[in-house]
Image 1 (cartoon, rainbow, N blue to C red):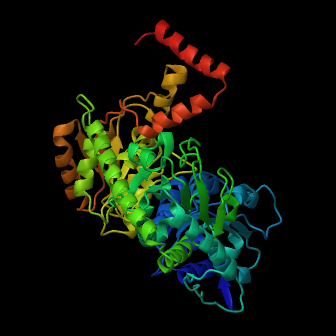
Image 2: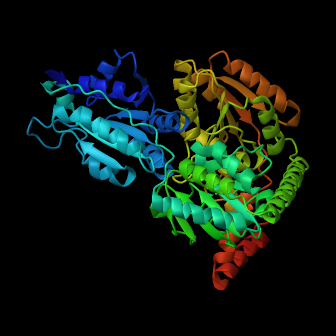
Image 3: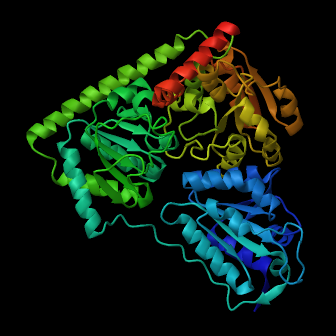
Length: 590
């Protein structure tokens, strides 16, 4: 039979269960857009910037059991989308990137958008293909999907020359996609033996602990069961905050060590066996590598490349996190230990729970007691938001100081319901990601917390929300600075270089994109304005809430990483940094 390449792309996407594509049509992909306009399965969504489209697709993958997809023009579109592709790649998020390609049937060179895209995207993707004939299209899409979703997930890239899209070509069949069966929680003999050793270490531990990353997000229920069996505290990475419910009495907080909140720092002090699930011990997760091991490490991850990269492990277990945790639970239940061990676990659990509860309450009281003047106290804001946001609502952050306020002050209750871009750490993620989540969860409340600097990058993408009647609420934390960096400048520089923003009239942006605008000035109107924002968003229109936030109090994370990095310097450079800051303070007092 003969089919155009665009028809074959549509067939493949429909078979794969793709619901939306995000991107901008151009001369190298309009034929595919035309095909999708007639699809009852796939809806193409036009965005205002390909980078925003990539963030939307990324967020769709993070919060659904189907993949997000990009449909972009070559070269320029791919370059602009790289921020979102990189975010997905470093965070382990499956993403299908479809790009048009220059013609291959003319014999001419220096065509519009002509660029070796496969080399461009190679460092950012798990695999990249350039289609050369029609019969490759459908099988390549299926292969790319399988690669994107196998092992540690990630983005894949397919380039389809425009002439293949436009003109019919011979294909043998239109194969249906056979979705792989869900992985069975079965462990091979070698892995079972290692799991048995791990269970024995945990059983005998005096003070065990669990450290959970995004890789454990699909096994949240099992992780809770394991923590309760061990009566062990649980900490998470930033990205893994929604891998364990914050209301659980064994939840201590994000990270451990000097950059963690007191509950987590104290709960993991003198930990002798640490079970790490689905984490790479990256820079943010470890507070700039400020964690000093006191433990034997049992490291569970689907990607063996992460083992022993930053912290040496006594046992490494390669495999699906849920399957390994299930195996550990089975081993511990079969051999729970003697009566003395059981009694010690129960006593330990009671003490850990009480200590965590005391530390959390004290930290909340510390923030409540902070004098924010006429501005909005962060703790009071997040307490009010938590009380009004349903447990199944979604919260999305951007990159900035607000990210760590969320981590320390907001109680995350649902798996995959707090989305925090982490390793690529690109500003501008929040607004488009919130739009993508609302598009695929129209009956859920979707809230974005975004700094004023990050909002300036991609805030106009709320126009897409207006177009599709998506009532997302964006709380813009407005302090007139790039605060995470300006705070970091204080000690080593004692001045702010290029981190102070000019005044921005966010109401004008709201008017331009068709969003409601609300302003939150101080403590008295926090709850009322959050309620008003929810009411307005329920009408299918986005809402911008201009929050006059108080950033005068640093998070534990910020203070911890500044101290860790300063102490890591040799004495000469440490004295130089401190001396320069002190001299500037004397020379240019505030």
